[in-house]
Every structure is written in structure tokens, then in C-alpha cells.
Length: 168
Image (cartoon, rainbow, N blue to C red; front, side):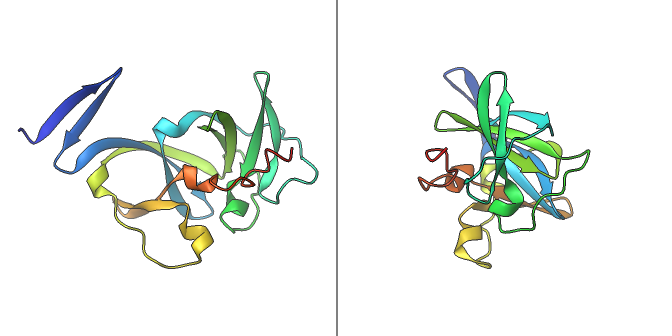
């Protein structure tokens, strides 16, 4: 087998080498940290627009927006990660993801770039911090001089009450 193999699976092409599958991540910032989300989980990225608050929602639910006729819950990602609340700037973005058929918005400080890495290049995250923060982390990746924290979004919404969607 050559060092790089291309595998056709249904309607997508998967590129693999000895380090595993080639993945594509979108990076964003919260305060001074860089985080990454697998682009396969992202529907779109929006500029910040008016978000309606939802009384009685969990503290990390920033509110809701109307996205082409669909009501989308927007999570303040900073609060979800136990960081100080978000300050809205011109760089603030809402990353729309889909989780179990529901669209959810993640409010982030800024979106940076899309980059590629191989599955085998993802390093285990160090066991520091509390269990709440660690459960969202898939691993870390050293990109140039910057450490990117790769998120496992499904873990953010594993618990039934994670978004309070049922309550709303």
C-alpha cells in the first residue's frame, strides 16, 4: 500500500495515510484560547445578529434566533466552558451546528481559519482542570506555534438538559 490512499465512501472521498483519516477543522477563539470543531459538524457561520433572551433557560443559553423560519437556540460557549460571559464585538460569530436533528448556535469571540490534520496527529488532552471542562475536549493539536483545543461537540449536548430545549 502506498503512503497515501484515497477511499471512496458513498458520496465523499476520504484521504488516509499512516497517520489515519485526513480531517478538516474550523478554529475559533474564546478569550485567548483557540478551539477547533470538525467542519463536518458545522452548517454555517453567521455574523452576530440580535438574539432574543429566553426567560428560565439555563445560564449558558444566550437566547434564540430566527434562521430562515427555524428557531435556533444560541449557546454562550464561554459560559458553557465556565469562562466569563461573552462581550459582543464586530468579530463575534455564531457557528451553527446540527445535533440530533436540531440546529444549535455557538456564540464565539471570533472565527479564525480552516485547516487540515490527520486523525493520528491529535494528541490526548492533559488531565488538568475539572471533569466538566474536560468532557468537551476530544484532544489537542500543535499547529505551528499555537495549541488548538479540539472539541467533541456531541459531549456538550449528551445530557438531556444540556440545552434546556425540552423545557423551552
